Every structure is written in structure tokens, then in C-alpha cells.
Length: 210
Image 1 (cartoon, rainbow, N blue to C red):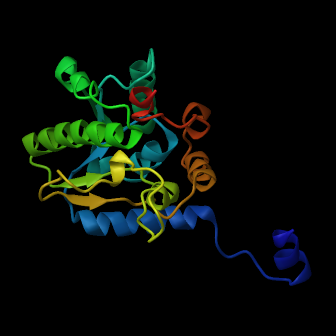
Image 2 (cartoon, rainbow, N blue to C red; image 1 turned 180 degrees about the horizontal axis):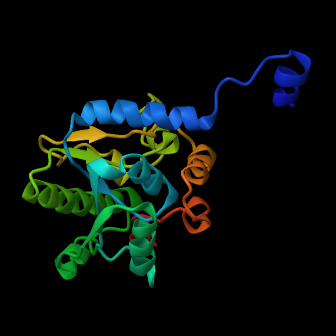
């Protein structure tokens, strides 16, 4: 309806395309990176894949396997990383000590913070071992809203929105102003396959919550 009004009735011309925003995001992120290589947390999903595809030559992707992944998911993630064309590493720390931290709580918010602690600690250790000081992730607008970053009440914490533990790392969230349908459209424009552009959201720490 809006398109019909703007183009056909009001007679406006279309002088902007979603691809223009991709170039804007790339340009701004590259300016902030200033030639540095960044560590990018990679879930294999559409959000992290779009960010990694946009900044392909400036990032190293890492997947932190803390026992939260579904059966066979790591193979899917590694295949998607190849589609995106990034250097990718899977980090599998000792799992039993980490799992033990969940044994004394049934509180979902506490579990989210436990998961975030392991996620951040292992990401920072890997990044520091490579001399990296910038961390990139695929946080989107719902992550920002649900985490209470807009001034509204906290709905739930997102591990990718927690700042504690990152030491002196610079955090970049190039698509934090976008919603999922927009990110999926970006994935299609970037030529990523449907197994990425249409992929169901990763549960993150959801398996631990269950």
C-alpha cells in the first residue's frame, strides 16, 4: 500500500535500495576497524553471517561450543562459514566445569549470565591470543530492546549484549538497528544461500534454559 502511494500516486522516484545500506554499514565498520582484524562470534545464523559477509576480509569467525549446540549443528555452522567465505575456528573448552555452574539454579536470567560468562571468556582468550582488540557480532534491534538498552524494562539478557568481561576490547555491532526480516533481505542481496537467509534463529543458551 505504501509503495503504491509513494511510487504510483505521489509519483516519487526510487533512488535508494537496500544494497545502499549494506555499503553504508561496510564503510562505517571499516572506518572503525581502521585496518585491524576483528574477532567475530559466528553462530551460522543469518545475523552473524550477514555481518561476516559484509566484513569478510577484516574478521576471523569463532564459534564457542559450550554444549549449547543442537545435534549436528557444528557441521552446519562450519558449512555455512564456508558459504560466507570466512576464516573460521571452533573453540571447545572443557565442558564439565562449565555445566556444573548451572546445577544450583533454575532461574533463566541467572543461566543466561552464566552462559554469557563462558561465551565472553573464551572469545576474549582467543582474540587476545591473536592480538585482536576488536570484537564484532550480529546483534539486532530486538536484542537491544529486550536487553533494556532503549530505556525500557529488561525482558531478557542477551549474551551478545553484556559488556562485562570484555576488558579493553572495542565492541562493534554493525546491524544493531535492523530487524530480522531486513537482515534476511540483506543475506539474499549478498548472495548467501537459503540455508543461511532462511535459517531459524539459533537458541543460544536456550538449551541450558530448558
